[in-house]
Amino acid sequence: MTAIASTTVANLRDLGGTPLADGRTVRSGLVFRSGQLDRLDLAADPAVAAMGVRTVLDFRTGAERGDHPDRVPEGARLLVEDVLADKMNSGRVPVAAQLKDVLSDPVMAEEHLGGGKVEALFGDIYRSFVGSASGQAAYRTLLTELADPAAGPVLFHCTAGKDRTGWGATVVLALLGADDETLMAEYLSVNPAVRQAFAPMIEGFTAAGGNPDIALALIGVVPAYLEAALDEVGTRYGSMEKYVREGLGVPDETVEALRARLIDG
Image (cartoon, rainbow, N blue to C red):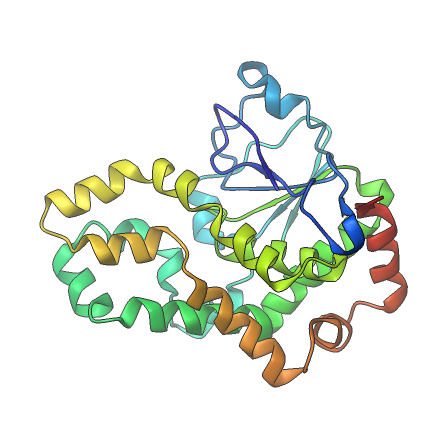
């Protein structure tokens, strides 16, 4: 996976170049991931303009989209698939959707997230990516769009581009033939970019007396988060292939089209 030096989009990466089985790689220039696009400015950001994105898939909640609406490249389609919709509708607002509020109050953060609670909460969220109807609909759309040449280069994102987006990237790369070590390395590789993007929030939180371990667990990603989703796949379906086929309802011909389009070599 290749980081793209954008001045207006945080945590922007091309899945192209990721190593796969038999010496193959992911084809470059077709599938991108990032944080939110509320500051996108193609005129000031030639690196993004050169990507030629034709489809944008937004995994965020309605509140997130309302606070920071996407700026979509001219002529591109915008698709919205709220991964967390089922959790939001249940009345249990996930911490991933209220990051700013949590980090503005160190006392509340310690009460609700201290002592390892943040890791447990993220584990529950990641399992919902796999098992919830809204999560399944979102990742079904991602795979369907990536398999369709008419969609053009696709960019998928959430707010920070690490959790909902990270699981989407994991599913795609696993289907294309990346091994477990590569999947984890690519998942964790976003940490420096995410921490840089949220540095002012982290610094403000710790300056106000907040526990830096909580801030880093919220802002970054750790192996246990991804492992929770992978364990959910194993428990429910037995394999990634069966998760995609039975859980997401993506037919085999779509998976084969995805592979034909995205595998290089």
